[in-house]
Image 1 (cartoon, one colour):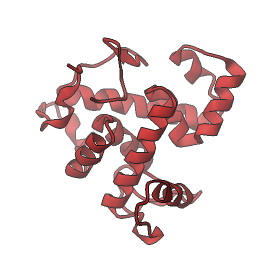
Image 2 (cartoon, one colour):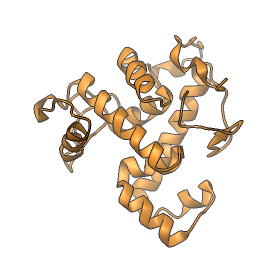
Image 3 (cartoon, helix red, strand yellow):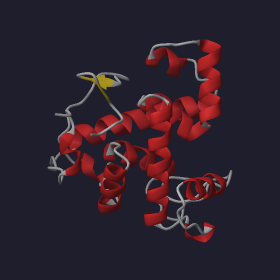
Length: 193
């Protein structure tokens, strides 16, 4: 059994007060698309929290849009790759944004061997950047990888996403994990089975 098979059941809320800062925003959509892509809904929520603070119509200065802050070109590419209908104006809709954002996150997790931290860095800075950093620095421990991210914004983003991921798991009944741990009992952290 996967240590996190309870991903796909209703979470049991702890009454700690943290839920206001770490809500189960758009939970039915998050749960559906996380399950469809075999990824952690807690990671989807952490990305959403740090990307947009759950603002449906969020737009970044570089053109990323919606809850998961997808670039229109990335969303268009994913839609073509998976033969999904796509209209840029629909990218801000929660269903479309979470569907495509979860699909993209799943691709990044697979590409980076289910390493939550490297996939989060790739979500922010692009997978090409993470591959270059890996090639330049070699295989580093996850902590060292984060320390050596050359973009301050991406380094801070990865730390915030990982913190949010851990807090979501702690609040909603998942066991907290040690700093930047990526595997549990031989299973990879970002993946749910």
